Length: 175
Image (cartoon, helix red, strand yellow):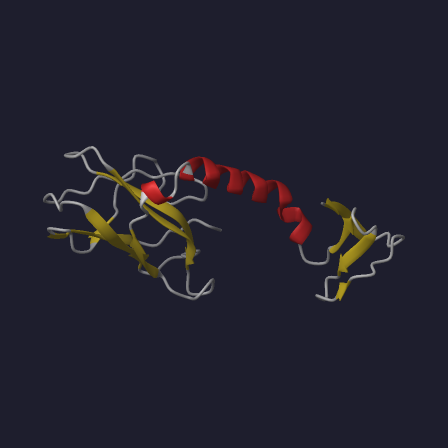
């Protein structure tokens, strides 16, 4: 349920002005704003110079209108520059902070060398490891240095003397 059927709007801000609010109507995909999908839109505007922020949001209408937005990349056809705006948040009345619009500032690529590779690794790691943090799991971490266990129970209790015979625990090595 990370996609949306709501109408999505964007305002792009640059050193020479802004686009005003524009609805993102026609994606290059048959169905827009689906979970895990990258949509591509054309937005006609005067040249805004260097971009520094965007405001993105939706009208909250339609079933399943909540939307998880990863990032927006704007390609300037005049300068051939890519502007990246990271979000990694929900635009949903019932998720996160309840906002259905976000103001995103430019992510400076020079401060994040290898950012795309790092982000891909983060996503891959979370996909492989998120099962550990499902409701009801008890985690047991083994400290090789001390030979002791740390047990984290579903009720959020932490036992630094975790029982080695606890059949419900999952054991992970810490170094």
